[in-house]
Length: 90
Length: 246
Image (cartoon, rainbow over all chains, first blue to last red; front, side, top):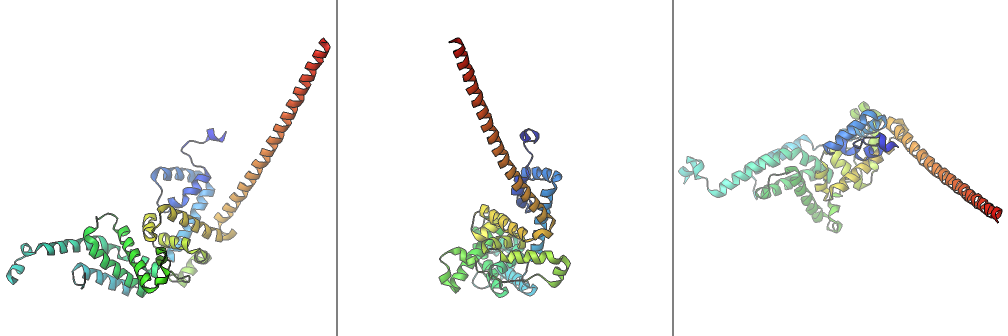
């Protein structure tokens, strides 16, 4: 019966759960993205699920580490020297 | 000779022209990726001096190969160079480890904690700490993918290039890794409650379906039995009619 109530392009929660993380990473194709967005407009549970993954991703990216600025500066200089042919053995 | 050189561009011979083109390509394709290379190198080596060496080696290799590079996806190209350089570095340092080339990128230490300042923790409260603990508890194969995509902001394809695994493997490990982190959040988080409710509903629905299935089967059996009775009754009637006729 439910089959006849859902449009063919509509996603179920189960289908949404499968693509939620790819959507979050911007790796989902546009067709499935719009189907998911359509689903998210109506489904509070999946919306909360997406928010949680967004928070996790944000928490992890806050944890991101970089090389110290002086190291990066040396590497930039090294790159420039290579480009100028000033490094021996290249 | 000196005059010819000073007179300008026309005096630049072919090898110098190639050199300049290569240098331009290097500046255009490689140098803009230095920040990413630095972050990924630090992920791979877990040590700033080693990461610096690795980036330097990657830059040198990239420069030597720049004329063969077709100009498409420079980041993916550079990450592949970096991965190969790291394989060789580990092989030089610890040859016994490298029967499996993937070990080269499995040199990440199990302990870390860099990059997360006290201020961050205060600002973002308990949540970041829980995520961090859960992240550190992930099996290495999940953690390295989560690190490349969420911490170093690589695409799935780029992470696949670094790890030399198919994109599907990156997706699967990443999604499972994040799901494990989410499962660590506990009941305090709204989505965890939602997920728990959903799981509960799922279990109930399954149990309901099974019950319904059993009910249907029971009804089916009952109908069958009833039909059997009717058939039996029918046949009895028929028999009766037969008897009556006889």
